[in-house]
Amino acid sequence: MEKDKSICVFGDSTSWGAWDEEKGGWVNRLWLFLADHEPYSPIFNLGIDGGTSKTILERFEKEAEVRNAGVLIFQTGGNDASTPSLSGLCNISLDDFKKNILEIIEKAKAITDKIVFLDLKNCDETKTLPVSWGEYYYNNENILKYSKVMQNICTEKEVLFLDIEKLQDDEFEDGLHPNAKGHQKIFLQVRDFLLDKKII
Image (cartoon, rainbow, N blue to C red):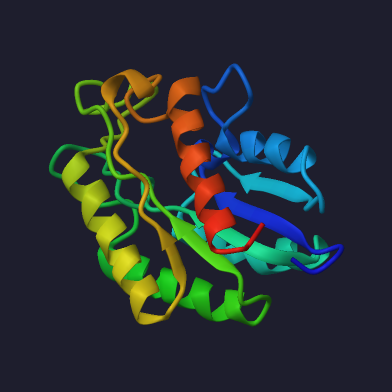
């Protein structure tokens, strides 16, 4: 990566690092890895609680610009696919999700050619129908559906997509967010993917 360029990661509470009480999440684990290797690439964790494709689209350009981004990583889809009830409409409709991902890609390509999308494939439905902190429902069918749409768009637009392995029930803290074990599993996949693609 070009000298003084940074890696910017945009996403939700999972990319922010929720429930990894050991090392602060997969993004922070990536930062710790990069800090021990030359040449050093600064990384900025720009995940926010409740983030969706819509909130990423609204803010990522300016935040990437001020941080001189050379790599853009997006983890999204889970909150888009959530519903306010078991039979409710998704937080972000599938059509709007498609439009948001397409626009994110278009705007990201104006910043860098190093763009990566990744997903989370699943949740532990015994704890997410609803989640413990409110009337929000997450189910595997919707999460997988949104993930596949994002993957197909990335293939069509020739953008890198990391197909994260499903997490096991013991790799979740609350059924939705990974615990330290889950974040480590994600980190290893992201690290190896970025090394393989010569992004880091």
